[in-house]
Length: 431
Image (tube, rainbow, N blue to C red):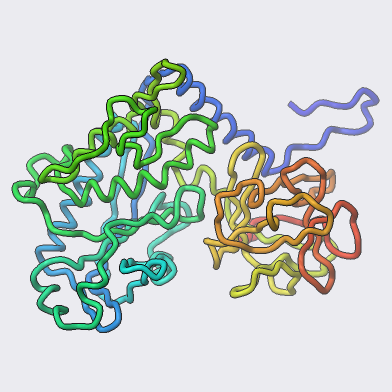
């Protein structure tokens, strides 16, 4: 309940929308961290509903190489999606209720070469318009895309083309994780191992492509360790780091996915972890699953406007600058814990408002930049005054905030200066 000051003349400021949202999420974070610290695996009273958009791209190209899914590949991918859904539900002891919506995309799309290496993959920015055509606000918690470059038909189709045999499809890649606007993983379907397909039991992760899907998805969830401030196993910890007793360096057998034993233990919060000669069990505990929902941390899409009508805070495509504009820019605002928020332009979800070199210095540059993992540089405090206007402040506690001159680029300043330092932040749909 909101109280009064002792003179009864001035009412305390009502919590802002962002204050209230942060408090709710912080409560969830605290409860999940407490369950982890107690080693408490008490199941949820109701499972967390988790929705996956899975897109099978049936035709992809790289240069003059041409890769396609055949009818068998489509049937196999349907089985992989079912195997992922049912086996992960079982592994998480039904604290997670997964729904996979699988769609096949018939148009052809180009692959992207990975960092100048011999590997190529289906880049999110290449097919973002396809993703957007399926995504409703908050419906899907992650996006998977799958291509097929293996098989006799693809070999015969491409055998004598430039680059075939020198470039290969990357097995799996997670370029966007839970901390981004839309988590995204992409991987090659491959071929089923002998004796594993058709499925005998959908609740048993028997398909190699299922293991690849789970692996890339688990990379998305590594953000939980930072969010909760707890020990959380990296997805590649099955390779045998000393702090994970019982896991010797991985050696493949003929089926090449022995590491699913490790995945099971991560997804059920039962990975043995050694610290000061004591063993505790790490991974995902039941109350953490609610924090994997895209809608939990993503607070919505907003405009950021000067209260005096001089323009909107705007990020431009192809430029790192933050400026004022007459046209509103739509910003995705996401909570990242500890009273901090990430601000990304809706049409450039891979970019964030960034403080150069994470330096809390007067006049430092504030710009758009890709996700670097440096949260001090890319997360902000939203300080609301009694008029409902916000300052976008650095997390360092100095009170310095983003200021945009009438004509110029954004800076970090402590004084008001000649520009916009306070903002109206409101839902982009006007509600």
